[in-house]
Image 1 (cartoon, one colour):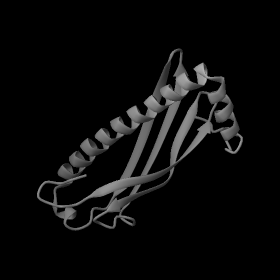
Image 2 (cartoon, one colour; image 1 turned 60 degrees about the vertical axis):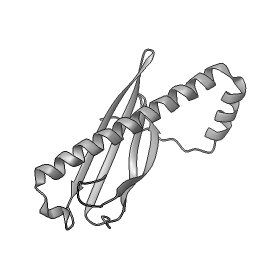
Image 3 (cartoon, rainbow, N blue to C red; image 1 turned 120 degrees about the vertical axis):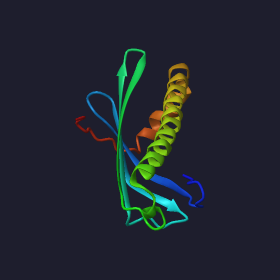
Image 4 (cartoon, helix red, strand yellow; image 1 turned 30 degrees about the horizontal axis):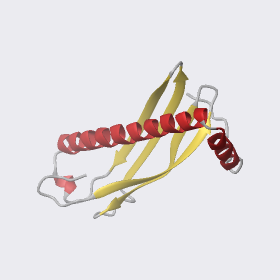
Length: 138
């Protein structure tokens, strides 16, 4: 995220859990922090939850993002509307990028899985070490 006239760099780092539900998959942030030129550890909290649901030949996605922030100086001098607008634009762009990347990866995995018995065996063996839990989707 860059602000005009202010050299501030911030990037999210997110640990995500993936669980199955009756309807599909749930991806949820477990440890989300912002790193960069400002220490925002105690000033910002964000949570992300994405639900992926099969719908015929498509996958439907629903994402909720919660961001709570206490802007540090010099950002606290900017009008709240300007900060929220910059945050909305930046978050939207990042989400579209991540969402597209994630869905392309899922499609690619499915194409490999459906066309290759060796790929299925390799993935199945890898999944034996993964703990999956059922989570009710709200």
